[in-house]
Length: 455
Ligand code: GAP
Image 1: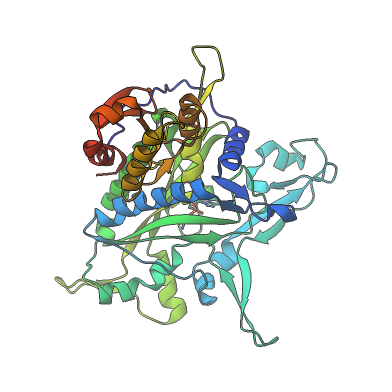
Image 2 (image 1 turned 90 degrees about the vertical axis):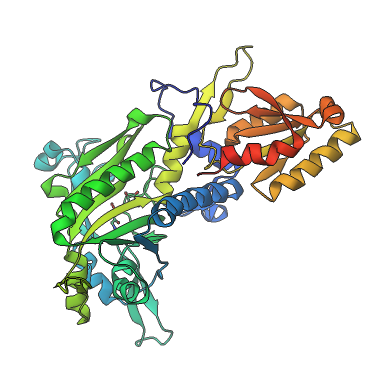
């Protein structure tokens, strides 16, 4: 991705943003709404509004572009949310995808046992009120659903608990139908569903969310080299998108916290007011998935090297991240309230990377009462909206309109003023430093495209 032309005027010691501010902005400006709000909402499920869907699409497209389009040895698929139920037995989720929970008998709060401080577990004591805890109970996170309409003949299956399973199911089809050879990868972006017992922190832990996965298939002898390669590549990818570079790090999983399929795992974590939290996992899945699906389906999922004729089960490097966590972290990372030097209202600005920003440019006639300004502005807006998401706004004074755009992260505002009518140039105002330059109308599309697209 191209670097932001003007480095954001943000520093690493900027205070952490309270999540409530992000939630309020998201609702106020149409990024995210609580799902089924008029019925009281559903915990851990959200809808995305007009700006949210643009931001999400940009995030998804950027991931796809970097992972699939720019790699000759990576292809994409889009698998279904519902699969054969045996998939989840083979994957180990029916048996292992569980949370162990305890309730406080006094304050009635519920805790995941693996989230409790060790001393509370040993003493069986609530971390909030010191009340006695119940015996641990086990909950499976898979969401059940049923196929068929006739009672008694319906088949129980699951909404996928992790999106990546389709990739293993389609592995053999991809090998046979495209020209890929190990080492190669398959990517997918798709919804996943988990009956999280403790959903919360806005988009951070939801029950319906979206994941992006790369499953990279390698010869066992090359596993370490590819694991290191993707680990670094993904870290740099996230780093390129954020302003607070020092709020990103790796954390290696301890042996006791490894998922049932992982032999080794690193989380890329981002630091917010909630502390360090997982953003993406890099997992050494080895031959777990293809071996298990071979065993459970009875189909041989091994691979024959076309050159050496060696037959083996490829090992897998997985990079698995969340679209929603990316959405949330990027908003948190970009959000800033800047004091107004004139001592009036603080300026709220989203310093999103221009290529990710939901609206790329706003076209603003300086005054509303001059017909020629409006006609020229509308004409420019029509030309630009064919190329990028562009808003036209003539309501309120120019300062207020700039503020409205800053708050949603629009990197450029184009103002049509009286000089425009004389010399066919416009003012282009940049979001982060509020600098202004004059650009000829004919050169405007290229001027903006160069700054708001990834290349
Ligand atoms: N296939 C491996 C896998 O699913 P995971 O660590 O459970 O691994 C991968 O999930 C990513 O999916 C996480 O790093 C996170 O970004 C996202 N994710 C997981 N659970 C989530 C939830 N309940 N809500 C939102 N995002 C979630």
